[in-house]
Image (cartoon, rainbow, N blue to C red):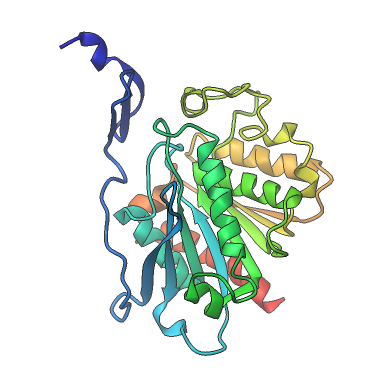
Length: 309
């Protein structure tokens, strides 16, 4: 065998390795747990939906099992998973359990988006898929969309975006896109970025970003560096929650995003929630820990704070 076939193009051990010949090994997010239409035991029902059949764009929808009552409307959370744009799905056990827990704690409908991944599909495909999914969600606002759960139970006056790591980056970029392109009249109530992935404060970008986006212009790419985006002041939501972890090497990037928002002309409320003594996406791998439970409660409170307003 030609030894060149074993040359590594990018790796993020112990979770991911891509070879220069195009082969990909994913050691995270490759499992798939079934959706749970009967949520009597778990407290949350779920189903899988195809959004764009031509590309395979799909999502898993979660709804509290006791919430499907006539006339009852619930907050709607569109969730973008993390994984560096190259791994993870809504269907794997980690994200299935995490988003299910969020739906239960916040008493909300959650739509977890399965955007396509690099290197099979380089950025901007992930952003294009994520925007198509958000437009699909918004198409239900008049009760005439293809998905009954959204038509019947989603409150389109309480729509939130949330995501972790690369998904936090996705949340920001989708909210920016919503400021320049209409979402069927739907306005975002708030966005939650959980330990978000952006470029470094000194203007640098990581090898990860250049791997998933070979065409990037680098530190002046607004997708990875919000401070160079002239649209930032038009961010179409009134409230932003940024969750960071003390030991996370992305912590400073989350704080920089907060500073960038505050220094722009955006008129809204930004809040930082820091978890002491924890590392990146700790809540995904130890969801029952005291600090992970506290983080979940914080996010749920952020979603439901709007309810009382």
